[in-house]
Length: 108
Image (cartoon, rainbow, N blue to C red; front, side, top):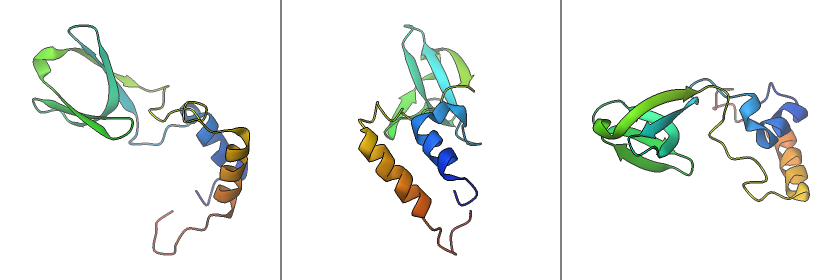
């Protein structure tokens, strides 16, 4: 975050699909009953291990999977309004992110 300006950090919260970080591209898994599970695939073994928003881990047997597609344009992160942020809370978050200093022990 130190290399991002205030606007970029704020935009990442308000519009998370505009910039998806490398390694965090989700996968949409369509099941044989046409239900869709979205999340990060952690294992392609049988069962496939998917972690969805909120950290919910799901084990999906391969025989239940109709197709899998990378979600290159949609973030798994919920939008600010879906998280219940008010305008004041977003302003507070932006101020916090602007003042946030990385520890010298953390990589940037």
